[in-house]
Length: 135
Image (cartoon, rainbow, N blue to C red):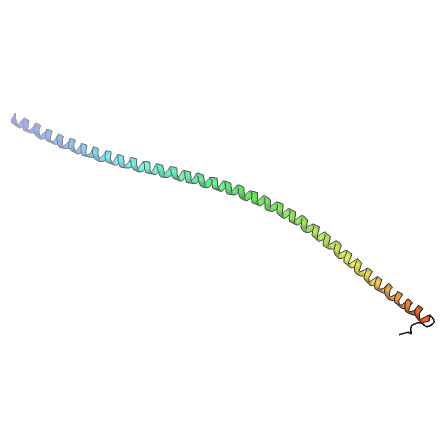
């Protein structure tokens, strides 16, 4: 009977040791769970921050794209306006060049007429009594 009690005591001691091991493992697992939960929370927070940053970047990109579109539209309108102004200026230049050519032709014609008139006046004056001597 003593031997049975010794065996029982030995078995109980092993069970107590095994229970202690299990409780130690349980404590380790609980600590590991807390650590993993903390990591999970930190990663979740980082993910939310990155999503907010991404959302802000996407919003800035959309705003900048809208600004770019507006600037491009304004630039196209300005280009069209400047091209129209250039065409108008080119037409005016062509008209002025044509007028210049016409004016130059008139100047040549007027010079010729003036020269002829001067020659006729000189000839008439030369034929008058007491007229100017011929050159």
